[in-house]
Amino acid sequence: MDFEKLLSGYKSKACIMSVDKLPDDRYGNIRIVAGNKPHCDDMLATMHREFVPGSPYEEFFPQNKNFEDFCYRSAILGQLLHTYVSLPFMNLWLNMFLLPLDSDKEGTGYCLYSYEVTPHADTEQRASLSADTASTVLQTCIKLRASANTRESMNEVVSDIRKICESDHCCILLVDKEQRTCETFCESISEGSGVLPMDHYLDDGFFDITQSWDATLDGSTCIIIKNQQDREWLESVNPAWYRSLTEAGVRNIVLFPLEYNGKTLGYMWALNFNEDNTVKIKETLELTTFFIASEISNYQLLQKLEVLSSADMLTGTKNRNAMNNVVNDIVSKKAYITYPYSVVFADLNGLKRVNDESGHTAGDNLLKTAAHVLGSVFIDAEVYRAGGDEFMLILYGMDETGLEVRLKALEEQADRDNVHFAVGTYTVHEGEDIRTAMRIADERMYADKKEYYEKYPERKYRAT
Image 1 (cartoon, rainbow, N blue to C red):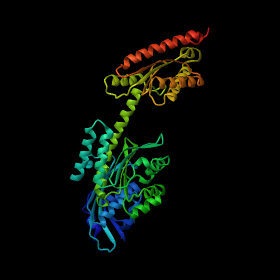
Image 2 (image 1 turned 45 degrees about the horizontal axis):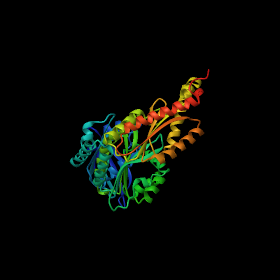
Image 3 (image 1 turned 120 degrees about the vertical axis):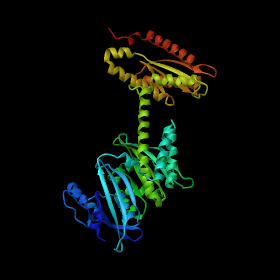
Image 4 (image 1 turned 135 degrees about the vertical axis):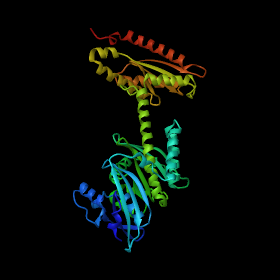
């Protein structure tokens, strides 16, 4: 075949790829056997050396398992392929077409590879999907926006993706590289597959495995392990993850990073999928993960804002705003509550004197210690900083007897940490109002504070 004549009709960058076919659906060398002028000029500009026909492809293109799979599918299996993908390591976008060609050489297949690289994403190209894939992605977007409960909608989307992939398991795993933690955000497991929930594998060492995925991706948009040749490659580049997958009974896996604004939020994968639909699965997940990552980023931002709006930044307890919200939910019966329950007000004695004599840093440290003492004694309750040096707790299911035991423990722990509280309490029984209970507990606390300063007047103000 006259490759030079064939390529001369292409204005865009184009070249001819050859793929050596091996037994058992494997492939061998992949070479660039010819290129048109735009291709040769591009190689000279980017590689700073002239293109040599017949060169191994990795001498001029980034080595990539997904690209190799596309070349094999086109040159050997005769598939007409198109994809539009990002090249994260180069901050570029690649629009690529592969057209299968007849071969006159036994054991070798050929395809025409036409490509265009741009620095920015083209929205029209990203949307140029097959009808089935476009419909799937559209449904995903609708479901992501249809519910106010992000986790609920994500679970539904992941279940749909698992069914599209005909896989045993689909999962979204969130990763916090700063905290060195990972958590299952949502997952779907095929009934009867025998696959265990992801939390079964999330031990202390699993985060290290997630850290290895970026190196295994090596600039690719995804990792696809679908046959023995891929498994052997994975074993050579990431033996720890390979062993983990093998021990879990994983036959194949497609894994995508969830990236948003240059940050990896986590990963999504489908395992034991239908290998006959690999290209469609890759195309679908490539775009779906973009929208999922965006939604997760928004969810995490809202979570952070919620924490900021309800947390006391100094002590780490919940703040007055969170306390008021809980009380309002109890009054309006939005929150289910069992009776009896106890309300506790604890006011830190001696804070003003510490501030006056040792400075506000010392006073802040005393507040932190007080919050820690309350949290360690009332470990099963939220501690709210009601304001200044005053804290409030709601002890669900706590009657007078249980409360007395806890107050004794609080007194002992406070003495050990050199902290002094004025405490007021009220145990609420069915039919009583929490607002009345809070008022009475607050009054009792101030009575206890008055008694404390009458006993230790020197602890109230700076010594003169």
